[in-house]
Image 1: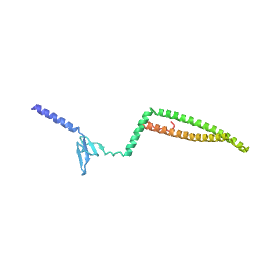
Image 2: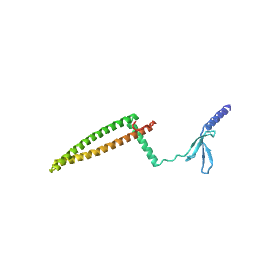
Image 3: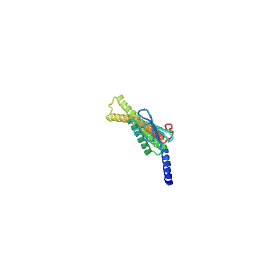
Image 4: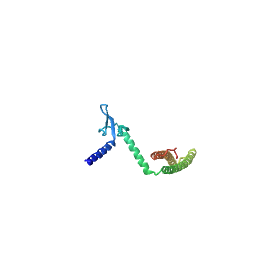
Length: 196
């Protein structure tokens, strides 16, 4: 009999500890009454967790569902983060690649500007020859007219190419600056001024 009493006492004590270790929930039901239980009703989204002594542990509020725009923004952010991590190993690498591309574009721009200067000079010489023919009352040779047209067309093409290279420079600089800022934010590094 003593063994049964002792076993019963151990089981009761174990049960008391199990109940004592349970987490409790407190919420307000549809009728406005405060409810406390060790089980949270299905669908209850706003409640407070309590320890077994009834002391508040944490308040849990319903989380609003993300809007389609929020989900799209989050997905875009995750895609950008994945792209940045795939492309670059460090902020210094971004800066190095940016500087190389900007140097290449700047060299191409300088070449186009030299070519434009050569075309301006060439076109001025051709127009001077044309003026000399006109002053002398002579007919302008068809080859000279063709050369003037060709040089004028080449000059216009170079002007467009120069404008495009300048735009490429600005877009490239802006794109790498955006990548650099995003990479730093992704890795918790402080942002710095452009051109770093």
